[in-house]
Amino acid sequence: MRRLVLVVGVLFAAAQNLRAQEIPDPAAEARIHLGPLALTPTISLVNAGIDTNVFNEPTFAGPKRDFTMTFEPKADWWLRMGPTWFLGNVTEGFVYYDKYADERSINGFYKGGWLVPLTRLTTQVNGSYLTTRDRPGFEIDERARRFETAVDGSVEVRALSRTFLGVKARRQKIEYDEGATFLEESLRLQLNRTVTEGAATFRHELTPLTSLTLDVQREQTRFDFAPLRDADSTQIAAGVKFDPYALLRGSATFGYRDFQPRAPGLPSYKGSTAAVDLTYLALVSTKITIRGTRDVQYSYDINQPYYLQSGIGGEVMQKIIGPLDLVGRAGFATLDYRDREGAEVLVAHRSDSVRIFGGGIGYRIGKDVRLGFNVDYQKRDSQVPIRQYEGLRCGTSVTYGI
Image (cartoon, rainbow, N blue to C red):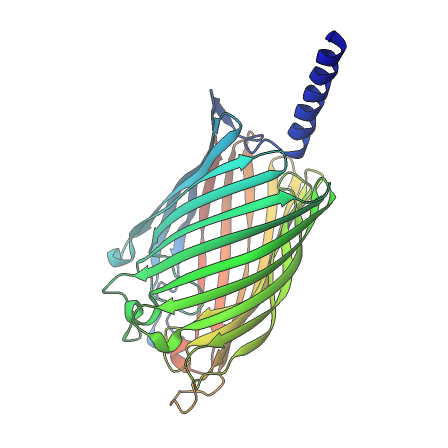
C-alpha cells in the first residue's frame, strides 16, 4: 500500500512538473507583483514636437502646422485565481494640439480576458473596448471619433503530444460618432458595421518556442446603414508563430481570401493575404522589427467601397555606445481601389501609395527610462490631387517602464 501511495505521489508530481513546462506562466516577466496580481505599467510621452501637416492637406491647400504631443500611460495586468488567470490591458491616450484645439482628444483601450490552461484543454475568452480619435488607417485623414467593441473566445485541445486542434470565434462592432464626416461623407452611415468570424485552427509545436499554424476562417460583415457594402468571405491562412520570450518573436501568416460582396455590381476579390509582425533581438545591441500586411479594407466612398492594401515596413534599433542608440525605419503601402459597376468615380481602378521614412536617437537612463529625438516623414501619392499630401513630424519622446 505504501509503495502504491509513493508511486501515485511520484506520478502526480511528475504530471504537475510536466504541466508547468507545457503551460508557461503568463505573468513571468511582469515588473510588479502584489500577491496574486502582477503588473507591467509603462508611461510614454510620444513625440512632443512639430507636425508640419496637421490635416494631411495637399501642398496647394497650404498645410497647417502645430505643436503636438501625446501622453500615454498603460498597464498589462495578470491576476491568478487558482489554476486560471484573469488578464488584460488598460491604455489611455491624451493627445494635445496647441493651436488647433479641435484636434485634441482623450483615447482609451480596455481589454480583459479569462485564461483556463488545463493539461489537455485550454480555453480563453476576451472582451475589449476602444474609444479613439486616431486615424483608422491611410485612407481616412479625418481624426473622427469611433468606438470598437469586441468579444472573442477560443478552445484548443491537445490531440497529440505536440499537435493541437481548436475553434475560435470573434464578434466586433465598429461605430463612428454621429457627427463624424470625411469629404462630406458621413462615416457613421458609410462604415458602421458588425463583423462576425469563426475559424477552425490547427497548431503543431516544432519546438517549445516555435509553432506552425493553419486556420480556416469564415467571416461575415454587415453594415448598419449601407447594406450595399455587405460581404462574406472565406480565408485559409498558414503561418509560423514564435514565443513572446524567444529571440525571434511574433508571427507571420500567409493565406488566400475569397471575398464576395452580397450586392451585384461589385467585383469580388480572390487572392493572397498576409500578416507579418516579427521582432528579432540580436544579443543586447540590435533589435529588428518587420511588419507587413495584405488584405481587403473598407473605404468611405460608396462608389469605391473597398480597396486592397499591401504594405511592408521595418525598424532597426542599434545600440552604438554606452546608453546611446540609433533607430531607423521605413515603410511602403499601396491602396488598390475596386469600382462599383456603372458608378461615376474620379479615377477608375485608382491606386494610391504611401511612403514613410524616419529615424531617431535615444539615450537610456538606467534600465527603465529612454529619452529620444525622432523625425518621421510621410508622403501619399494619388491620382486624385486632393488626396496627395506630405508631412514631417519631429520631436522628443520619453518612455518610462516601471
